[in-house]
Image (cartoon, rainbow, N blue to C red; front, side):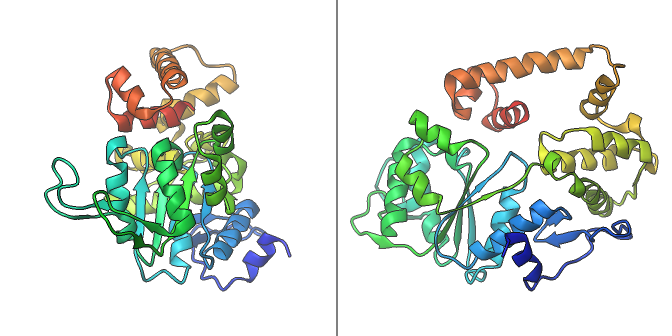
Length: 339
């Protein structure tokens, strides 16, 4: 039985993603699962696989482009698992300084190092009995990869400065937007850890590869942000057509940010083509041969070259941030934008 057929038979509670918006005659309605709005066959198959994985103890690797919904899928897996009543703990591996990784994951004992004035519980302990979600696992330093491998294999760890080994019972989920297999081949990621984490693999399709979901998502975010800010908006037909021609490299996250900006900044009730961000509008003009170069586009090209050039040499958002004198969060955001 195919995964999407299994998904149809699952006991699901589907809800309308927004008020008053229905699929056209003959089309399936939009579906909402833990914040995952979809109509497409490909996402229905993903949900079916996630539901199967949720009942298992083994680790699962979530792959997909930045902004495609890996964090939401991880929450869905946890909330449909036998561990749903226990903690769901998220670790952003790109945001933890390398020297603090071990302490953050495993905790430490008082006096283990300078500044350790008391015992600290690590994230594995906080997730005990529940799910630990390692987001951006590709940013995990090699030293910590070896330590994590031991935890996955033996289901035990030792706090920094501790003498006793502690048993752990957590379900591990890991996610990345990078090609981990290529990182294994280049030596940037441990092969043994890769196969330990990749017992089950779920690949989320990009938004441009599931365009059936675009319009439902647009109306969902219009409704969501309209309620949040108390500003009712509707999307004009021309603007909607332009948005359907855009490729959404930032996926659902980019779409969410664009709709939020439009709801907040547009004074009229109807959102028209001229209200759309230049990144969306100008690309469509280029397709029709009407666009000319602009200062914004020139600056964006320079920004792209600098961030990608720095990435090729440094391979780390922390090092890129230091080299370009910007914050690490901005370096990560720009890298996701252009890579």
